[in-house]
Length: 227
Image (tube, rainbow, N blue to C red):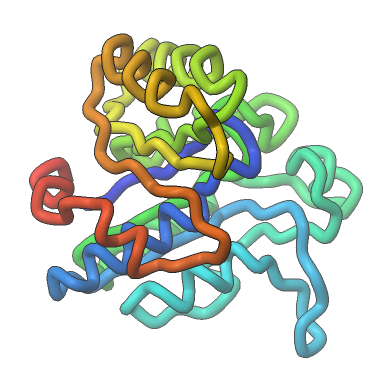
């Protein structure tokens, strides 16, 4: 399976925007792309079905065709920790099912991108976390870091945990979340010095989502070499 798992140092750090931008970058290389958002907390009823906006965004930017349930097998209405949302819904998130579905989708594409939920160690059921899911999928990880107060600690701890599991950390993305952060450049420089993986892209602050603009921040050829 050729692709990447997109994780974040926390929730709401820009994982979906980065994943959609990566899809666009690979699309521009004439690669057939597909994506999954296996678990999503926070959904709304659209045409009688519970849907998550992040999963729908990924579907708009991938080239391969797939049903919504294939892209997002676990969708929960409340925007809370997924294992709690699943329990409230009378469900259990099954990592084996996600793994099987992911490999089925990946077989129809050149590049498979999987977006996580929340941060790296978010629980998915009573005994397994996002990190355990990545261990099953055996995909290299791209870590999205929201450049803001607290990002240094979050990024370094996340990278340490990923590497401690023997999972490949292909690189990280600096996502500018604060238009007026006076020390953003210094924070990015600090992480470049302390993280052993490469900085893949700097995403400038955006008032509105622009997948093509994000795609331009990446070197898709270099990323392709990491697949």
